[in-house]
Length: 246
Image 1 (tube, rainbow, N blue to C red):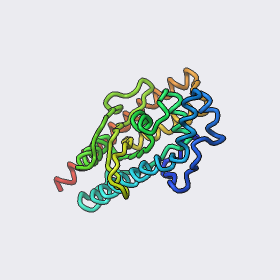
Image 2 (tube, one colour; image 1 turned 90 degrees about the horizontal axis):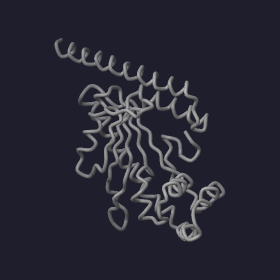
Image 3 (spheres, rainbow, N blue to C red; image 1 turned 60 degrees about the vertical axis):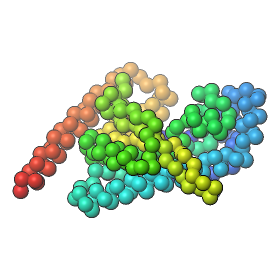
Image 4 (cartoon, rainbow, N blue to C red; image 1 turned 135 degrees about the vertical axis):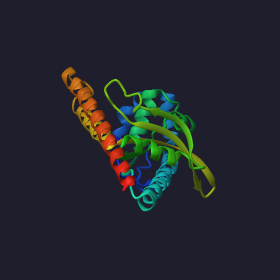
């Protein structure tokens, strides 16, 4: 995982976040911005921690929802489709880098609209069917609004990447009223997660200039992972059928 993102499973406490929007680590990033945009960034710095706070709370809300689903599945359905869950909150530097890269206007409203992965949740499931099962259970809740879904399981990326991505919006209730906050939720199987973790490490090591033979190896590994998911799903269905017939 790159250094500009708080590691999955470690959400950055709002009160511990650096209140300076411009730090030594972000100087190279903000040099890409024009003078007027830079002036606006400096004007925003004192309020940036407040801007990020609802995202941290939104992560807490979604993590609670998933925790409740996880316990319900375990207690009432005798099986738990969720293997593990992680969360991450983008750092100031990472948000600024994306603002500069995407040419987003340096205002909170523009950042809020254009950058949808400031808050992120990753749900790792046992089987492909469980991915959709958990997605349906989460997004069926009244206070969850689905903004966008990208199904890279049904339609994998050219490099072999598979995952179900959902951009959702939930209300976070602050002292002055509810605030709608966007959260990116990624759902995948254990095999998909293992492959994605390896791919990330390879791209990081080679600074995204990955040799062709290694890219080919990654695509082959993605096919092997998909085949494993299919075989495991078939075995799981057979076990469930045999259990019902007993």
